[in-house]
Length: 317
Image (cartoon, rainbow, N blue to C red):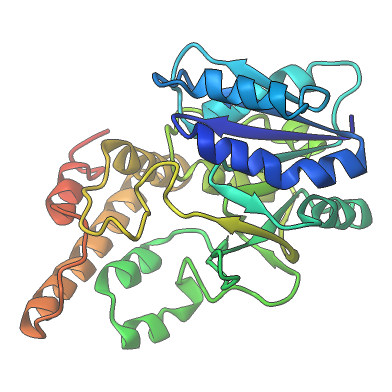
């Protein structure tokens, strides 16, 4: 086994099976790939569905299912998939983290592998994430900052131009490019990165864990590279529902706020986190006033500002 693929399932059996089906051809042709699906204690019939698919589709030679005792979140589910393989004498060279709500285009795996093979100083590579119609999604990012929080909250073109160098999600690159962090929905990691910095921080339940991981890798000398020739369809928000654009005004879950606060406090300190909170609150307040004056439709998550203040680093540790 040269490549380990980890897919974390939680009540998304049908999506997981579709994701597995999308990589079957390339997995079989490469011949040195193993896939493990970790199930985060799904309370539905996910286990039975995935086990049935593995059996009837003859995937058992390259795919296995691991039941976890609790739903520990995205980082936890991935760590539990990776950890046993990195404790073996013969360890995988690369680990590909793949979301269940994805459909890999042909060649998605091999393209990432080739880039890592040809660039031994690169630690993490990521795919071009796209919609089913082939249009690109944001999947190559800058690290969040005080400036980016203000820009994100204000939603004003002139402010976005002024703070262009701080925008977290710039237009997707069209060529191979080094970036600060990559979306965790399709992220291939060199084994030596884990040996250098450890596993993902599973104190994050969901969101910001890949930002944190890429930041730690970068500090340890392992850059991230966006490889658009590797293409993966991402059915955004189908796993968590948080970023599903068909569900406007949905209230942000508590774990999103917990993860965001943890990221800023852990990586920048409490004072910086407070200033980032203040920057977003000011920018977002201006936006809410402007939205009403311009009679724009309200598409923001319900109670976002009050939830944001309640979860601020000023109030919560």
